[in-house]
Image 1 (cartoon, rainbow, N blue to C red):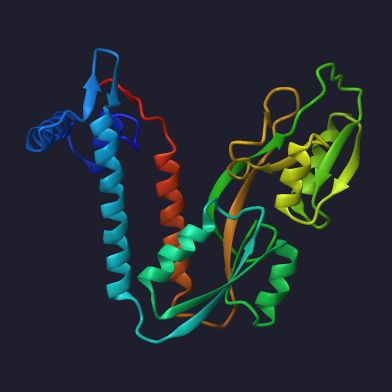
Image 2 (cartoon, one colour):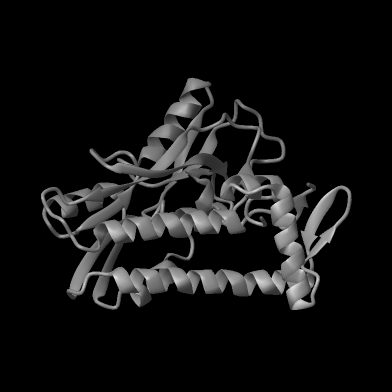
Length: 278
C-alpha cells in the first residue's frame, strides 16, 4: 500500500477490494497494539510506529527472497564475470552485489565498470559473461527505461544565444551525441568544456559549476541540480542486458532477474510516504 501510493492502487495490484485491505490493516494494528496509519478525510500517512514496522517488514521480505534464491541456486561453484556501464549502474550497486552473493554462496562475482563501447568487445572475446549497458549494443534485452535529463546550473542571466559549456564523456557515448544533436537542432551554441572519462568525473565537474551535462535521471542523486524548463526535453534511455553468444552461464539469468527485482523495489520505496485517501 505504501509503495503503491494508496489503498486503491494497492487493491488493484493484489486483486483485493479496498475494504478488505482496510480490514487487514485494522486487524494488524489491533494485533500489534499500535497505530500504524494516521487517516483523515484527505490523506493517509505512516505514524512513527508504522515507519518502524515497515522497515522491519521490508527486511523480512528481503531475507525471504534471498532464502528462496539460495535454496534454488545451482550447486556448482563458478565465477560470473559482469560488465556494467557506469553511467547506468544503479545506486548502491555494491549493496545489491552483496545481497546476491549471500543468496548464492557458490557464485563468485567479478565486476568491471566502464564505457559500454569498451565492455562489448570483452563480451565478444569471452572475457565477460554478462554486460549491462545502454541500447547502443546489438541484440540486448531491454530491462527498463528512464528519462535523460539536463543537469547543472545555468547562469542567472542565461540567454539562448549564449554558448553552453558541456561536460560529457568521450565518443562513442550516446549521451554525448544526444546533447550535441538536441542543442544543434534548436540553434543553441555550445562548446565541449570538459571531456570526462567516467560518470563520477562528470558529476564532480557539474557540481563544481564547470558546465552542464546529460545523464539518466537515476544517476543525479541528491546533489546534482536538474534543469527542467530552460532546455529542450531529452529522449528516454534504457538499460539492456547482453549475454555472451553461444554460452549458457548457470547464474547469468538469475543475476539479471535479481537486479531488475531490486531496482523495482528501490523505485517503489522512493515514493512519498503520504498516501492518497480512499
